[in-house]
Image 1 (cartoon, one colour):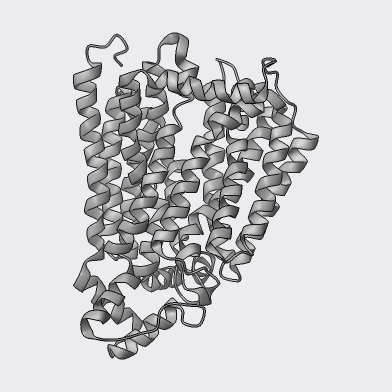
Image 2 (image 1 turned 30 degrees about the vertical axis):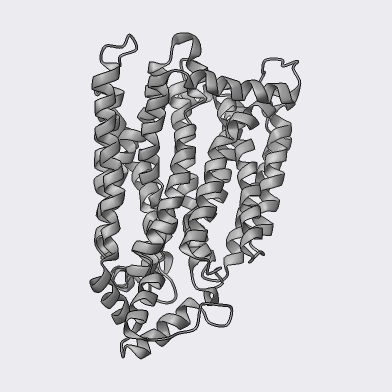
Length: 483
């Protein structure tokens, strides 16, 4: 690649990419630790909510985050990108700041929804800016840089948040607010709004038309069915953020991993470990973003030889195996291998979804169909919340399984409250069982097999791949839009 290519991008392109980096840093800095923050023991500074409450909050709010751009994109086109960016950053920075000080479930839910609105205002503007500051000759490189920024932010945010939460959970929210505040400087002094089509219609009329356009696209039965099937992939994919952090926190002893790093270098253990001699779940999960940064170009060059839907099917099968392996064993070292498999599947399938939509869309409706590409992600988040909430809560949640076992043995303990935390429950239960807390965890693991939830997550992915194969063979093979 010639370095001169980079000089062809205008300043606004680089400003937009930097804003994307900061926004993703702030978002993933919170989102990758959110499941633990919502459910972990209150004496650690977390909120101690139930798995059901966690799943409902994360699922509903994230679903709205991916649905709202159909409305916020119209608002940006009407009011102007710069104004909407300022509004977005104002909501995000204040939302992060406020959410860290709330403990009541309803108020935390409202604050997280408020943050999602800010994110939904940001998403369509930044994507449109990248599109308008690139051309047919450099758009491939331009969007490649853009997605690299997304993954850099997704890698930096959780790493920093993991270190900060060891001091105080509040610092996670403070940093996200501060990082977003940097974007005010960029948009006020360096961002030049790209030209956009003049829109003389009323704001409400633009919003209504945008919603009507979605329904127009969904009248295409085959397109609607494809979007419906892809919800299965995203429902499985989002377990990486919704369920796996809690699963690692509850069931996987990371002390051996910490000791392994300490044997290599105490500095390494200090960087990635905790003062308690463990490794936080988000540090382990962060390797997914690292894999993408390292291997995405290689994987893309391999799957480019396949038809987009074939690449999707193969990728979803691989990702299904990977997500299942992450839940199958309680070995911290094995997670690096299983997440690698998952990442390969993710890299093969996820980018091809948008490409496939662009290919099957009628030539005069490409933009309209592409505008619907976020809908499966919205549905996937909603169902991921259900799976990580009531399903995980009744199949694999350590608190639920311990309560169930104590009831069978006639052991009584107080309900979890401000004065009796989850950690105190496990400590007192371990004493009642004449075990240490790690021994109690192993007992529950062997007795109730919480890892069996891997069948469900892998099954959803494999069924999605099978249905996509049938969809291609039965509905698309004879289509004029066959790809």
